[in-house]
Image 1: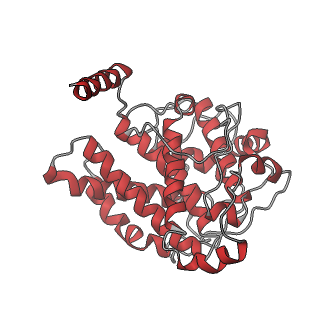
Image 2 (image 1 turned 180 degrees about the vertical axis):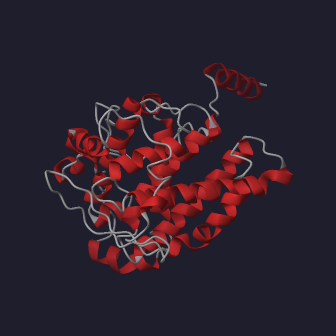
Image 3 (image 1 turned 90 degrees about the horizontal axis):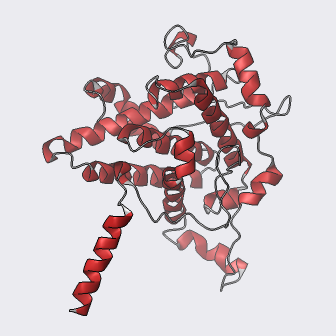
Length: 329
């Protein structure tokens, strides 16, 4: 489980947790210089500002230094110059799910859409399915050393939620409602994971609060990383190494993870508003990381691994056989 000093962190981050869905993120569009440059202007409800002290940024450079042979500038340049980190709009279009034919006309659909209660609720649910699908992709988890442990899986899931959350803040006002539902589903999933781990009832509420607090702190630090438009790859590396890997990761894996994060962030930013708000897209996987999905269909996870749990084939076969015996009798 998470550290025992989580109570202190909970108190520090409680304000962020309470007001998270009211955050005002000045999400400027991606601009590209030398083929790609990521500029995000972030203001988190008056807490994170442009003039944030350098020493307060993601465990300061003096602590938790990465073991890079090159300078941070060279590290960032190498990350950004790798084609894996970049996704063109044309490439993004290959990961769009085609819309099925509707029984009603386009005009009727537009008129009636505001009166449908689930027109944002359902896409938010599908987005969480997309995030859970990342944990079920064994090739991807193997590449980034995401084992069956609880903490890493929680951070890896939250990382993808953060990417979707940042785009939601660009789609006002619907994005704010979608973002609210997305985090509502995410916290509900946290509860189910803790239940699968058989957390004692007297500790359950506190453990859930700790999980939420640690993840919110993680999200805030990711936002802080993006304040520096020139050094954000280096800052993201330090954040991921400290939080998700707890300083136990090799440089090659960490580099690839940073490239993957930037790639998926650019991909989600390239989506048009309609496909994003309807959750009609897939992650932009690359052969260098994991094989892209062959069929353009919505993510419907069949093997939800709560807290790393996955039933074995023998166990499934025994259940099927037992069920068949009941039916025959």
